[in-house]
Amino acid sequence: MIYITDAKGDGRPCLKVYEGKVMKWYYCESEDYLFSSFINLLKYDKNFRIYNVYGKKVYIPNDPEVFKVKEELEEFEGIIYNLSQLLPLIKISREINGNRKKVKVKLKNKMNAEEVLKLGVRIIKPVELPRLF
Image 1 (spheres, rainbow, N blue to C red):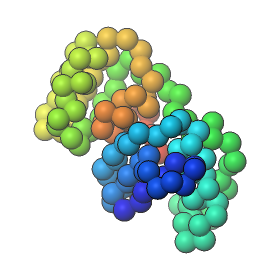
Image 2 (cartoon, rainbow, N blue to C red):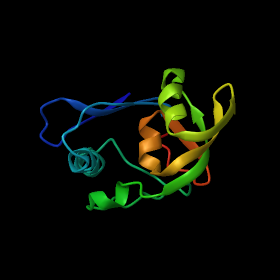
Image 3 (cartoon, rainbow, N blue to C red):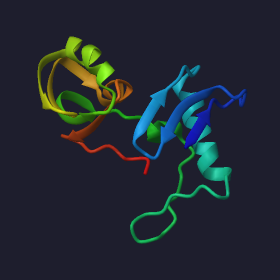
């Protein structure tokens, strides 16, 4: 389990990751606090490294902008982990189809993929976002 706190270090978590599957969002003062905390964790914690499929260590950029999701979606396929988040998803959708946890959604308006992620949906198509496991 990973807790990423805000950059001030007062211990309030911004994000909780559990086994790479469940993401829980907490209040964080700004996106920059969250991203700079994540960058600090990656850069300065000697036990926390990212490797590519060839076993080479991945360079971690200093700029928080690199970690922001800027993809605009009109429709997407995804997996919903928390079914209690289905109602907010229905409110922003023009059409929704699904079985069990897999959903196909057509949105009323274009939406940033990051907002969909905050609803607890992992996006599979049209873009596959980076995973944390």
